[in-house]
Amino acid sequence: MLRINCPHCGEREHSEFTYGEDANRSLPATDASLETWNEYVYQRDNVAGEHMEYWHHALGCRTWLKVQRNTLTHEISWVGLPHDMPPSQTEAQS
Amino acid sequence: MGKYNALNIAWQALRGNKNWQRAWRDPQPKSHYDVIIIGGGGHGLATAYYLAKVHGITNVAVLEKSWIGGGNVGRNTTIVRSNYMLDGNAPFYEMGMDLWRTMALDLNYNAMFSPRGVMNLAHSKAQYDAFARRGNSMCLNGIDAVILSRDEVLEREPALRAADQERFPIFGGLLQPEAGNARHDAVAWGYARAADQLGVDIIQNCEVLDFIKQGEEIVGVKTNRGDIRADKVGLAVAGNSSRLTSKLGLRLPIESHVLQAFVTEPYKPVVNGVVTFGAGHFYVSQSDKGGLVFGGDIDGYNTYAQRGNLPVFEDVISSGLSIMPGLSRLKLLRNWGGIMDMSMDGSPIIDVGPIDGLYLNTGWCYGGFKATPASGWCFAHTIANDKAHALNEAYTLDRFAKGYTIDEKGAGPYPKAH
Image 1 (cartoon, each protein chain N blue to C red):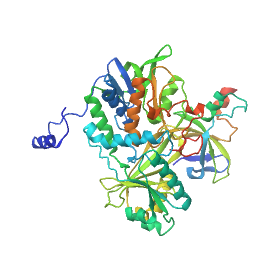
Image 2 (image 1 turned 180 degrees about the vertical axis):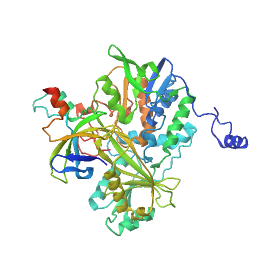
Image 3 (image 1 turned 90 degrees about the vertical axis):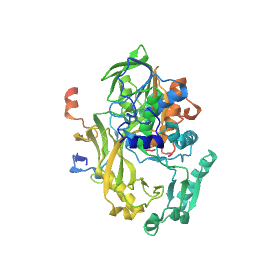
Image 4 (image 1 turned 30 degrees about the vertical axis):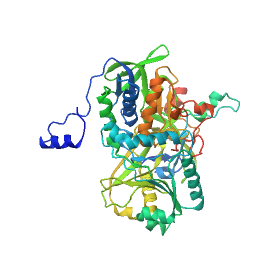
């Protein structure tokens, strides 16, 4: 059973959450090229390993969360709000 | 190696069954092949078999990172059907049904194909109408489909009476009488043995780590057992497709998800064919040993772990109890998970790759088992001729960019359909 540590509600069971999608994707500009839109709509990195993704705490605070999860082991290493970044990435940027 | 037949069995039995030979060789990889197929599952082995048998290309290696048949071909609910509606799909799967019917004789291996019928239950007038439409589309494509009344459904499957009287009254059903089940392991082993007899090298414990490129062309693979060169490299690795193509900088319209399946302890005959529940996602059949084999939805999040989680476990079982309350009395024997290559429109890709020397076979979602023979046959044709057969010409990789998706469910770009 996955357990997600919601920043608002604490650690809760997987069944309270709904999986959203890969959090590394960002919406292209409306006038972006067709190739860019094709990449956005259809193509996926489909990472084996650490994966940043959105989960919706549907049966809790109803906030969208950003979760770093290993797709090989199901291990969750970080949970934050959609605009947060995990400490490792924040350091890398500063 | 000899053919399997009744006389042979009797003769071997008289000699204490001590003289059976291994069903396929265990060769060392050669340095060069005409074709390498990555992935020793059902699709990869079938492809190698048809390359050798139909196209006369026998200098072929099937590279499997573990043991053959240990992936999704050994992790499914063994359902074989062709009840598809759209033009790109229906003829492909129906051709597969022809291959299923002749598989045991063709391979000299009993794949135990059992056309016991696949019946989809309708629980409302609207659902019944939708099934009538699907059935009509099937008939137009030459696939036998029968629309059943409530009484006919209950006559076929008396075990559904309990549910019919309670929460989910049955309105009717759609039956594909020629669909059914096959023995999943036997499919992998049968293709392996038959391909091996035609000269194909099946190399197990051989993991592909990277590709060898010459200019822009793929000319071989790097494996944990050394470099192996080939004129053509075909990928048939289901849920691991993106992992391999990422080494070429190629992204695919695929997400990898886990699908769980379940089997109960053996029980007296209670389910006659394959039954799918119409008011929840649940499908069930009974194995020849008596175990009820069933499954439902994928877990719903990207994963490469061949195990699922408990919420879907609970969801599948509760759907099952809604339609067959008696299930609650049975003990579950096993539960397993397989990694599905979920494509963005729910349909597969069998195509000449966008890189020279590469051929793709992926995107089977959770319907790959039934496609095994047709997929192998079409992929072999595509590799041998550098061009798709008419049956798989709709299964291109660039159909997403061009707007020709084959969206059986009508749900849009969504990697969770099948």
